[in-house]
Image 1 (cartoon, rainbow, N blue to C red):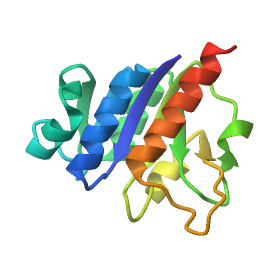
Image 2 (image 1 turned 120 degrees about the vertical axis):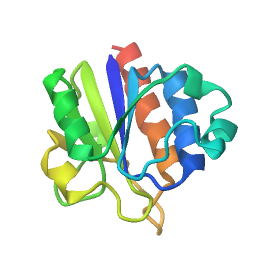
Image 3 (image 1 turned 90 degrees about the horizontal axis):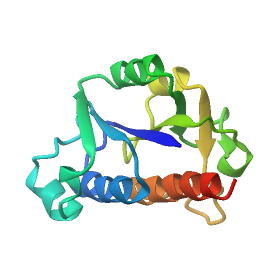
Image 4 (image 1 turned 135 degrees about the vertical axis):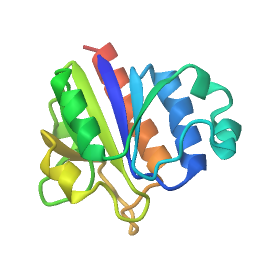
Length: 153
């Protein structure tokens, strides 16, 4: 399985660094940094990524929609990770072999424009009252769910 991760206006450099480490560990092909998402030379990313920024390929796009279009042109299924009226639980979703996962801003989530240009919207089942996870935690859960489920097929 080939996985691209799109970071749709992630504010925190610490989150981006943690996401890069997770993407390296899970074998993601690339990470697209979009909008206000800090670039990989940011000192807080370097501190949190612990060198993963040197092993994960990244591209910057000023607009998330441009990154989505680019991944679509490469043949990737676009899957936004977001709670919405269109979302299905991750364990009920069918993923293709080339998947591009879109993760959104810590406060506002995946942008409506990104959601509207996704092939599917997926959410993690939540049991608690808050119904919210940190974006870097969410990336880890989703990536390893996909990697482990494809390994066991």
